[in-house]
Length: 428
Image (cartoon, rainbow, N blue to C red):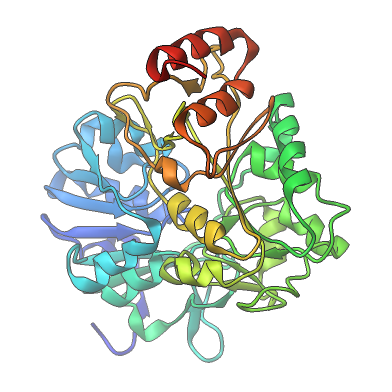
C-alpha cells in the first residue's frame, strides 16, 4: 500500500481486484453504487470473485445471473437486492451475529483481499469518515490487504469510530452521488400503528431504546412524543429519531454508556436525516462489536429492545431471517439486543409482528414451518406484541405460553391454534 494515496479513475482503482479475491463492499446507505457498477463492467475479465457484505441498498448488478461465473455473493446479511442470488445458487449466507462479524475479518477466518468503502472527503488533517455505516466496515478497512475509497461530498462526516486516515486507502475515486433514501413512516399500516401504540405504552421514561428499520419501529417512535428523558443505544436508526431529539424527548441523560449521546452502528433514512447527523457530536457512530456487545447493552438502564419476526411458534421460538428453506435476511443483532435488554435493570426484550401475513396466513404457528431456522430461542423471548395485544412469556410453561400467544393471534386462527395446542400439550 502506498504511503500517499492519490485519486484515480474507477477503472484504475478496481484493477487491484483479481480473480479469486474476496472483496468486502460497504453496505447500508453507504453502499458504493458507482464502484459496484464499474466493477460489474470488469466481469468478462474476472472469475470467482467472492463478494462479502451485510445489507446493501440500490441496484446490485454483481448478483445478476449473467455474472454468475465472475462473482459469488457470500452474504453476511441478505438484503433484497441479493436475495435471489443467495437462494438461487449464485451465492450463500453465513449465519453470524452482527456483533461477531468484525472478529471474522480480524481473526483471519474470513480474510479480505480488498475492501471497497464510501467515505466523506478528507478533512484538513487527512481524515475521511465512513459516514452512515461504521458497523462492520471499520474492521474491514483495518483488515483488508487493499482498500479502495469512493469519496463523496454528499456523505455525512460522522463522529466516533468511522474516522479513517486517508493514508489507509490504496486509491481514492471521486464521485458526487446522492445516498439511497428510505422513509417507512410514509407507509405505516393500521396494524403497525396499533402495534406501535402497544409498545409505546410499555416504554418507561428514562428507558434506553433499540429499534430496527421499518413500519413498526417508526410507528413506536411516533407515539413517544409525551415520554421523557429517553436514550438511544441501537445498531441502527432511521428518520423517526430526529423529531424526538428536537422535541427534547430523547436526551440520553440516564445512559451509563455515553450519556448525552445517541449511539449507533449505521443509519438509513432520508436526506434530512443525513444532514442531521453530519458533523453532529450528538451522534456517536461505533463498530458493531461494541454497539452489539451484550455487556455494553445491559449496562444501560431499562433497555427496551424492539425486534421483528417472520413467525413464532406456540412455544415462543422465533423465526426472523428465513421463510421455509429460503434465506430472507440474516441473524443480525436480534439476539444481542434481546439478551442485553433481558439483563438490563428494568429492561424489556420485545418481539413485534403482525398477526398474519398479507395473504392472511397466521404468523403465530403450532410448529415452525419446515426448513425454517430459529433466530431466537424460546428461552430468550419475553414479550410478544401483535395488533391484538401483548403476550408475556417469561417464566411461563409451555401450556401457558401457548395460551398467551393464542390470545394475541388473529381471531380467525385461534380455534385452529387451540386445537393444535391441546393435541400437543393435552390441555390448556
